[in-house]
Length: 352
Ligand code: SF4
Ligand code: SF4
Image (cartoon, rainbow, N blue to C red; front, side, top):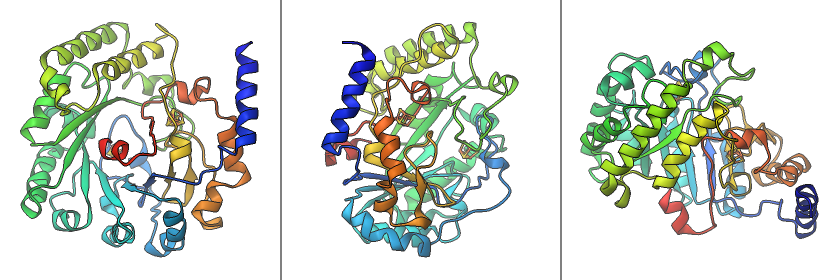
């Protein structure tokens, strides 16, 4: 049977079993504020001038859906969520429901808002893109690294045991300093660090028209650099074996090597390969303008101002999107840097 017939049969089977209706949504990502106070070279979100924010009044009508869909984990992402003046109010909506609430932040405001965060969030993920000079250069904010360190210190003074995890976006400025980044993570007393490749092609990060080649080349790797990345990755796997075994480095060696393959695919050295992912069936992203996205990279499937979260998630448009999405063949998925593959178990969520 041909691959095309296989795909047709798969879609037909899904039509019959109603699999593309979402009745359970373990993970909900919310972007409460659309602007950012960093100026990162791999992102254009900081260029947004018009402020958009979600309020408690916007989200409260969706709490019934949140209950019905069994949301277990809410992640506040951005933009920079800490620019939102009433973030604690938003967080309380979900914590009052017994839902784990995570803050994903670049950390410039961590110190100033440490008490609020310690009291209103279960855990924090910070962007850490290298040792001091590299991190500050990528953020394009002098002292960003030092502010992050002070912020984590302040957070731990308010709540010593609060988990703080790091996330490093691999790109031209830091690809040969991965081991130093892990070292920096230890010095900051992070609980763990994870790596992902920089996204260069999607319309996410306020790049609605995509990037011109000249801009992309400032973040992408060339043929020589990708060989250096391969060497650095092998050195990381070899030298930091204990960090991988005890989970300080979140990714397995296989997943770390996939980052190298991702950059190789960009150079045409190997075919692009989609990661395992079921994000559009187990999660959703609410943007600051109320748009509901199936993941960070695909386009909106509706808006939370037009109906309940559960209804928008199961609108004809949303179901059609999922029904026709073939992750292995979709070109956006084939270039995806941040996928989610989740069984519907609590253990899976705790591991993330
Ligand atoms: S990558 Fe993150 S921290 Fe940097 S400008 Fe974009 S949203 Fe802000
Ligand atoms: S692979 Fe990436 S782009 Fe495709 S659905 Fe999953 S998260 Fe979205």
